[in-house]
Length: 137
Image 1 (cartoon, rainbow, N blue to C red):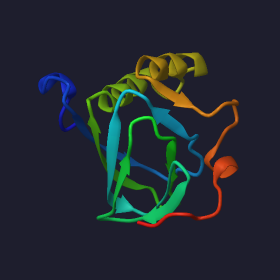
Image 2 (cartoon, helix red, strand yellow):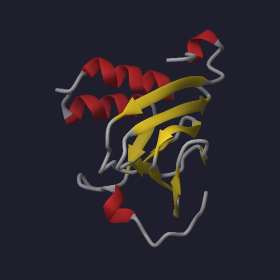
Image 3 (cartoon, rainbow, N blue to C red):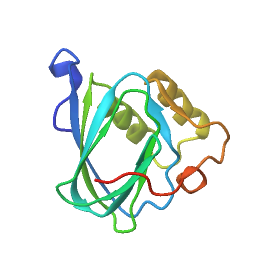
Image 4 (cartoon, rainbow, N blue to C red):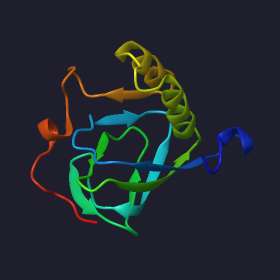
């Protein structure tokens, strides 16, 4: 965590996300904040709305408030996230506190508290909604 919203009147939150390979990542939208993802390491496939594109170190993705989005990575990597107003950083902290044995109901409660919604259906995934490549970085 680089900057928590509570330290700057909830204006924004800033954190890094260092992770392994992500092959499936359900699309979702944050109705309470917009965010920027800046790639620090790794190679990614992003989707924001109907646009799909690849990104690597130095690329930035703007995700407007309420936009369905997701990403996958075959390499693992590290992202810098900035959200405004704050909220995404607190959501990640709460989910992290639940640990690897968190139930679907627990994760759903956190998502709802932070105005985060997925696509309809329990098995909605990046692969199921990915249309032809329509965007670019």
